[in-house]
Length: 76
Image (cartoon, rainbow, N blue to C red; front, side, top):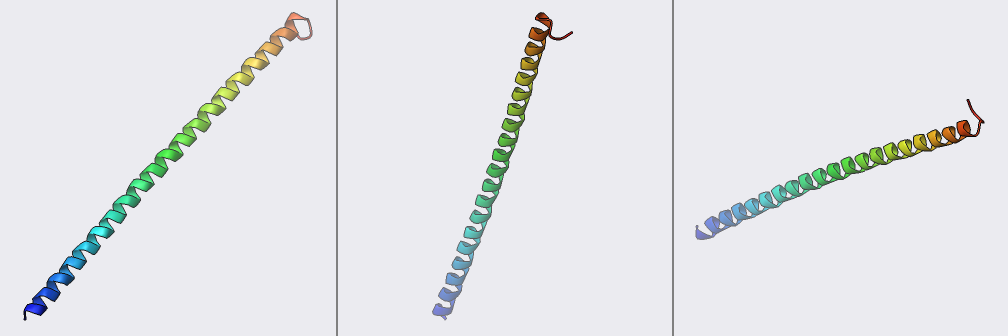
């Protein structure tokens, strides 16, 4: 009888340990997913900011060239 009780206790402990490992794995995956999403958002924002800076610089360059053209009578 004592050996059956020990066997049951061992199986229960193994089941509990497996549940803990499964829960830890799920929590780790959740953290990884959140980090991935945060990284993607950061890259999206960086791309947007970079494109805005490029557009602004291009507009300023265009305005400067246009101003020079007007100054030298090349444009009206």
